View (cartoon, each protein chain N blue to C red):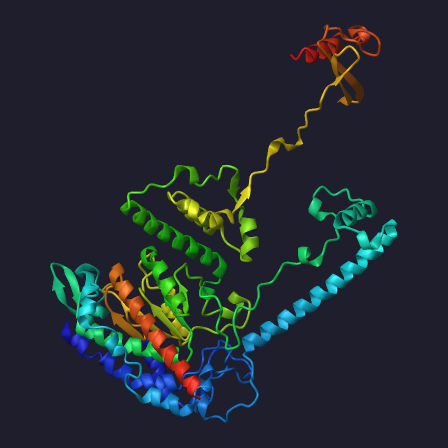
Length: 317
Length: 250
């Protein structure tokens, strides 16, 4: 067995010889260098008087400038268009709000399309065009974010912060136990009126696309954080990723009864509908059980089936 | 060793005649972070065998206490790791810490030199137990970390992946070279393809052949990983400090 390895040169000696040569000949590792730069290392060239910019930075600056000019043009068009629209509608151009714009567009371009997002709209360009990420690296090409090479720095930064909080809470809990202290039950984190934000909303915040598995992992990490006894100390961090549950009861408004001269309560509901029939119904309380339809009693409905339906629904069957 | 062979090839052939695969028209000069440093200082730093005194950062005793000498069982041994192993005890393989110390000092020297020349350093670790520590270490010394799922084209297809012309790392440090399914991390091969220097902690079940500066040692104990993180961080910070000093002296 030793004989096989006798043929191996001593890796240490090779490395020592090559180390200095390797480093002195080594250019910074840009992917777009088509040819290896000349054999004389950079320091031996004449010192450059003009500061030349990194190609990566140059490309970014060009794109950023294009984007800024584009947004400026769109904003100007939007403002001018808003004033034209106000004039068309006969409104004051100075006080024309977004709601007025929406109503005007709906009036001028009535659309039968079902999907609301497919209908014509006029919105400020910030809402219409997606915001781009700022420059991710400096002039030498060195990225700003320490997780840049994962290609999802914001997402993995969130996971990193979550783990940091979990570790901090473990240590805090240990410190509290040493002093024989227990967490205050009143301060416990209550997320009952909230739900986790959807994957799309999260992608919007992070400005990165994430997969379903990544999203599920993210949610389970945060649940793990919430489950710890002192999680109320990191409430702000957790609530960033929760949205309020929409209350379903908001639309129901119970109308108040009116009182007639004798002090009896009554309420009239207008535009009650059944197929093409329309009616106004008045109910009085305390009642006598008498039904009056257009001056006649229940026999207004000559058909037995209609009478039964009407009668049964009135007594709440 | 792939990357060593490439260096030898480069030194034999005249460099002007070599064309690499990504053929594009030579662009205008790029900002070279090294050219900011005075030439005389650079040569002085490179000639010195240990300019940043990395040999003082640890002792063999520290390696022993951090359990760096523990390998896996004999059955999972990769034959290419035999030169670095002292022997085995009750079926468990033991690293030769004197050799480990030499390799580790070499690696730390390289790390310090790359940091001195403002190189981008990328830390790798695949393993949930210590991943957070490695990310934190990278953040604290102002470098980069990748402890997540490796998307195929990050090195080999960087411009398309990141949507813009990207500068790749100059040095990759692998705290463990195996991924979650116990095969070699793809980045080892990709770094070799893109001629990026790799430093890797190789355990008894790892393949050290593609790694430029292997460091034979334990990659599973949290104590060992903490020690490596501490040492690499100190080396990087020393290199950066010297750079600041020399830039100010100018």
